[in-house]
Length: 373
Image (tube, rainbow, N blue to C red):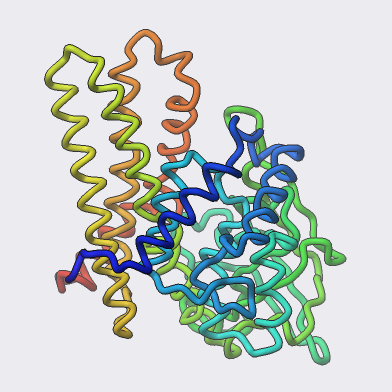
């Protein structure tokens, strides 16, 4: 593929870099897993939206610029290089939105996308259930017909951002006789609905980045269904492809980490660690080039499919390796490493969320390499 940036792309990069230099917070915002930090991050999303930088690849009618995926990757590179805040709206704009654009009705798009782009509505992901692990098809939460709508019952867990979020999306079994991937339907609903209980899950640091969600005869109108009835697995696979592949973890995030890692390595006399840091930087560049290739394929109408599992395993293990190296380079200073230590603790979860890497390797073996089950 042609890796030469066009004049338009270079101008766009310069615009984004200048805006971030003038507007990105000089100091890190409080953690988005706290009430104060969540609202501060929401305010930051408002500023991005006002500059039409919150969702650059979306159609203009929903707050975007109609940019292509290459422009979006350029934006992401500049965003993370500037040390800008994490995206509290990521579950919506990176996971639900691509699915909504593919399967939603015109009314659903009008209702949700613009508010999502401005972070007026922040979304939680309601996938996992107790005792299911990464086996999404084993879910037991149900939805039964009630007039023009549905009644939802069951429990979801490890729901990201659910403590402070406004809406959630997830799968429920609408055919009580079905098993595994069949008979599932994709729902969207406000977390303030009657019968919804959100119970925070405390992390090691005491903050609540996750929650359990309990559904007790919760009514959802018919327009809360995304896609066709009983076809939820197909719709959900579009979401998980986004989560594991291109949109949730852009290369810019890892490139910025790799650049910071090299700065640490330059101060070290340990040649083994210095070489490992260079290797990690090379990995981040390889992921960048692979992602540009994936974006080019998507532009040609090719679906990522199981290839997104390859990307997920790579970026999650690269992220963890870079943070482990940073702590080794810091040595005795590591306990007060601040940003590096926080990043390491978060990176530990990378091989687990978005589908454990053990499951992803099964998918790669069977669907990419064609090995027997």
